Image (cartoon, rainbow, N blue to C red; front, top):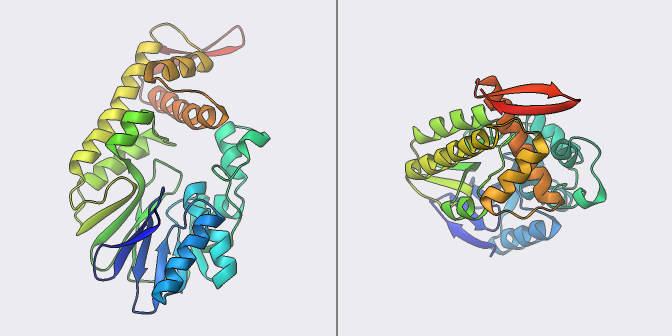
Length: 292
């Protein structure tokens, strides 16, 4: 864990739970793509950089989930580097309590205010900042989270953030986190048509061809859609739907899984209503979902 792996002449990744990218501008200066899940991750990254004699120019954040920005604060305080993000992701990075608040739908209890869902805050600059490296292409990849992006490096290596999950992850957890199902499916279509010298997803193996994995991720979305439609053959409230989703996929509920899977199921319900697959009605002061 936390080994530095070279991909191309200038691109590397650090092998850790949320893979961290490295782009070497020259023999001295480097950019990080994300920073790991906490201060300890940041410290391990710093040790790798020091061993190589590299100076951290900036951190380019793909999105604001805690496992991708958790090392920001430590590395920024140690090196004075800039952190780049944009849109809603920048707001969540500046004010990380927004993540557990958004997931829960209200003020998060202490069980949700921990490093896996709430990073430490860091200062953020926009991708439009004049010092942002112009040779790096910012690729919008919305769906998994609000304004998630990927990055294409000058040599054609593409860092894909969280738009693809590995087969192993999907087989184990079944329901991967998605904020906007429609946007996520459009992102999968976009990635399927992309060319790159190498694709680097944060939570799947790197590969020069991700088309098969894209199709597998898309099939999993359709499987969840069909499962929810089956549950909603009779009118059902959200809690009942969530309970049946957990039962169907053999998941175990705790506070973290309740908000992660629960938020995702709500997103499916919204998308399915907007696309005419589900209808919603209010009965006896309860919101019920049912198949059209």
